[in-house]
Amino acid sequence: MNDLDHNAHSVYLLYYHLIMVVKYRRKVIDDVISDRAENIFTYIAPKYGITLEEWNHDRDHVHVMFRAEPKSEISKFINAYKSASSRLLKKEYPQIKEKLWKDAFWSQSFCLLSTGGAPVEVIRSYIESQGEKKREQSLSVSDISG
Image 1 (tube, rainbow, N blue to C red):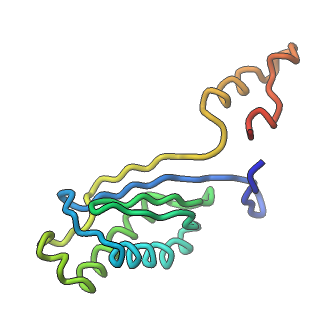
Image 2 (cartoon, helix red, strand yellow; image 1 turned 45 degrees about the vertical axis):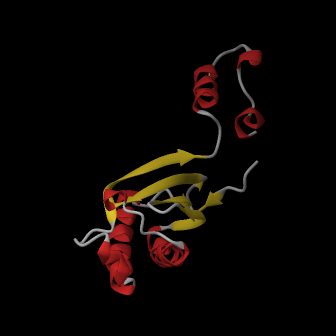
């Protein structure tokens, strides 16, 4: 089973896959800009109870896997990150302004997916089977975690 995170009152394992796209899908991300964007992410993330797990990029978008706490305000974090990184990246890498001349670096939209753990249908089946007297219909915790 995965190592679970915990605090004083709960045990949890919350993984997310975030995809952020450059405004107008302009191809402005190279390794240097991606590394700086990742550094900004790791600087801001702890203030929101978020931990970076994986980061990768293409020329016009980034993929991020991160862990969060139950109290994490993920949409506030994403907005704070996009705002700060947009400002800093455009200031530190003036060549970006050749392709993105207005304020925004990132598209306003993003894709956020929960990830990890058991498939939804396994959890649904487990919950549906609770309280049933037939032992063979209920799942064990090892069925869910593995």
